[in-house]
Structures are given as structure tokens and as C-alpha cells.
Length: 230
Image (cartoon, rainbow, N blue to C red; front, side, top):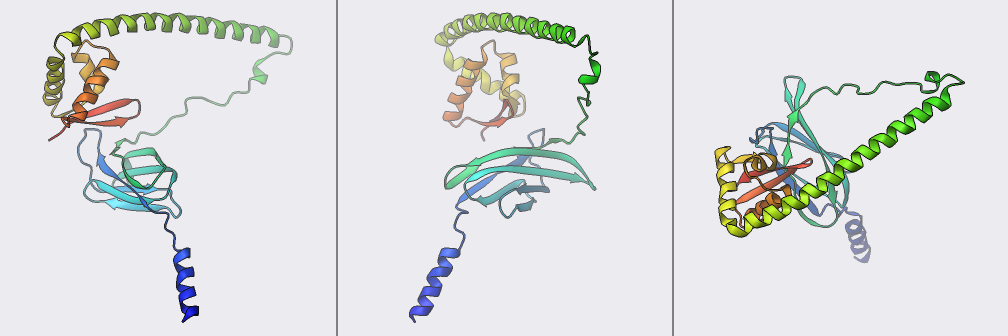
């Protein structure tokens, strides 16, 4: 009896209980429509993969850093794809929506070049000097450019504060109307085109709408996609 109990305890200790976090989300295409029949995989050990028939996916994963990949096939070729980095730091539920984009073939942007062969033995120092001056000139131009942008940004913040201080609810309503006019989905960049406020102020107003449950924000790359909640 004791021997059987010991075996059971050992088996329980050997069971992998690391898969305690759930990673799930919805899959969209570039038009922010649900995308069905998508293959989704994550590089856990062992690797997990599913075929999403209804535009949703879910994985149980342990803590760690992962690459989440999704692909849609047209015939035998991939026509839509996406790849996201995932960080799981604790047990719980993690939501990560996936947006698929056209799978364009990547072209080589740079060709291999042997710099040593491009320098003559007696002219190498001259070439390096010219390169150094060019880099220094570009650095000065960039420093002046960003300094000017900071001044404009401070001025814009002051103007935004004055506008928002007059009628903030009107600006929030305007954002809602812009999203509705775009079919219930649009980008934060598109909203800013219609409202003459700084990016920081637009972000604050969208955060307020999101807190109220009026909109949902999906981060994609360096931008945000704003969806009107139903």
C-alpha cells in the first residue's frame, strides 16, 4: 500500500504543471474583419499549433518569451501572415489580437560589399575622413531638426490644453463620430488627421474613451487601431 502511494506521489511530481497561463485572442485581416481558416502556432516546448476556423485562437503556455505566428493560405501559397512577440511573466489570462497583412516577398535591401576592395592603398585615409565628415554633418542636421520639433511640440501642447479646457466632451464626441464614419474601425493616425490636436492629447482622449468602454484599442507595430465597442 505504501509503495503504491509513493508511486502515485512521484507521478504527480513528474506531471508538467507549467502550462498555467492562457494566451488567446481574435484574428483580423488588414481591413479589421474576422479572418477564418488561419494556422496559428507558438514555439513552446513542444511547439503548439491550431487551425482557427472561426477567427479565434487559444493556447496554454508557461512563463517565457515566445514568437506567435499566424498564416492564411490561398491555395498552396501564403497570402496573409503575421508574427508577434509574446512575453508571459505570470499565470493568468493574456489577450493578444492578431492582424494579418499581405505576405509580400522581402527583397534584398543591401548587397554584400567588400569595403576593403573599394579603398586604394594610398587613399584609404582620405575616404575615411570624408565618411567621418558626412556622418558628422548628418548628425548636426538631425540635432537641429529634433530641436525644432521639440519647440513645436511644446507650443502644440499649450494650444491643446487651451482647446481641451474649453469643451473636452465635444472633442471626445468628435472622435466617436470619426470612428463611426469609418465604419466603426479606424487608426489613431486617421483620427489625428481630423482633429488638430497633438498625438499625446489624442492618445489621452482615446484612453479616456477606452476606460469608459466606448472604444477598444488594438496596438499594431508603432500605431493603434481603434474599434468602436458594440
